Length: 233
Image (cartoon, rainbow, N blue to C red):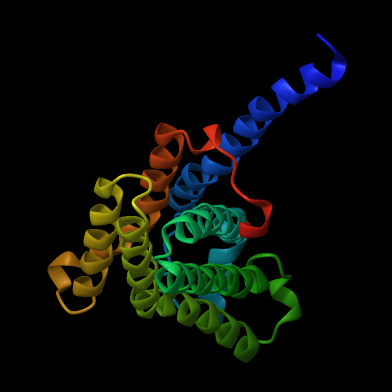
């Protein structure tokens, strides 16, 4: 067997490894999302209370900011990979294009929120509190809390991302109908959680768990066994 033939046979295996690593980015996103747990906020929101709190919990807030930033970066990788797989299937079936773009765009907005929230937290967590006067410190802390609250409004785009991908999965007949219906259900739960307080935590956990489900579907269905056109990624 020639070297050229061996290289030809080995190429699909290398492609499968690359595909599986990218597919597992969804699982990594889920792990980072759950690891990025915000520490308890200070009981005293005054400048003196904030200085005392940050002197004790600066490391925890720094870890929180870093984990959110990493989650944003891995989420973008995951979304790009998922879009590539769905676009390839969409071109084959002639359906699902708009839903794929809507899901990808909404997902990028979620990643942007994570990055902005991480940045607002990092300004205070990594900064020298002695360098800020009282008014600036309280204002910067309030900015970080406001960025976190935007996460509730982000339920809208989180739901759109999951529901759109679910529709694309069903229309292109890839990844299994179960994932399509699950994605739509999680998207609807996230939207309902905006108006039903009892479902608030269900809305919080729906999106972080969704990439894990997609990763499982990608690996189990063995997408790496067939080539995804480079132009689709």
